[in-house]
Image 1 (cartoon, rainbow, N blue to C red):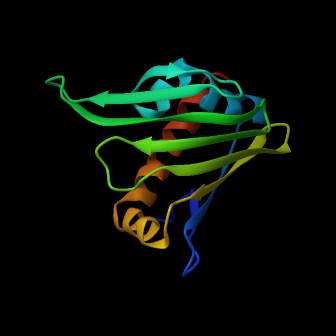
Image 2 (cartoon, helix red, strand yellow):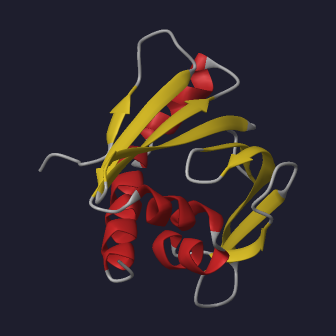
Length: 155
């Protein structure tokens, strides 16, 4: 089955372009990345901190049933333009990928349809390629499917 979230990884580059169209107004799509309660639902993680503003920071954490932390990530928000753009860093704890720079652009297609364009820049081509060897594409597509399902109920 074809994934709705598209990932473009050009050979020899250290970045990814990720796009996805949603049957959601752009304001609602933006909220999915800016409001902690919504982030927790579609990402399936606990939001320890999310300061949705320029120079804000964020921190997410996921634990297993026994309380062991299995995922932890944080970063700084460098640009925050409501319904338009978020530029942030992303760093996973205990992972070999280093700090990524993420530029998330939100685009209205029409009143009920919008698109997110994510430009993710890694420290090196090798780190980007290492990430792509994981089930990264399937994971982000699954998360975006949850985002669509959860926010469709809020429309």
